[in-house]
Length: 251
Image 1 (tube, helix red, strand yellow):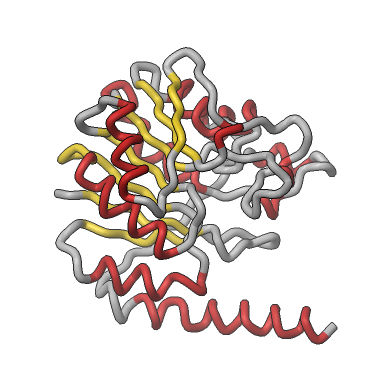
Image 2 (cartoon, rainbow, N blue to C red):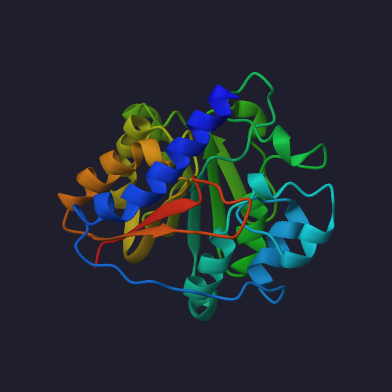
């Protein structure tokens, strides 16, 4: 009981200090409200492949659906990518989705029907003219399908990251998404290597920014000259503290 109480207390305190802390590093903000419904095409594709970047309201009617494991990113991605989706040519996502029970960050909570590469297939279906590239430290997640190529990478090792880019043979990516280990140090190592491969008009995304690491990320990106936004999602009930991402643009 004490552990539950302390957890709830920490959640409340983080909500209170979130705005105050963020504004110490980012000096402007805007608030966006939206009605979530079942008309989001990207969320429908997420549902098809059991990708936890998004969900549809109708899924909540299923008693077996576990909302606490799903983010609200597809709501935002649909909004910012919809009009330009046919111009996207190369997408890279770090983190394919391990189902190895010995892997601390496995995706087994999504059920037996889940298989690695769910979000890569989402991007393949959504960006009709794009080649999708995925990388992961778990070699058992690697696969190849139509317009999808994957390879091994250790995001803590700059040499491994360099080998990954050489294998993909892509000069510039339109979208790079870090859904990897989610640890700050490794995330920054990968960012410092990968940002050079982002096109001038591209978008770099770091998903699942947990409260305990938020201050580190805010401090790091404040010192850079890129356009940086922190997007924090809130939903009634079943809100999760990791439902937060950072976007980076060069221009």
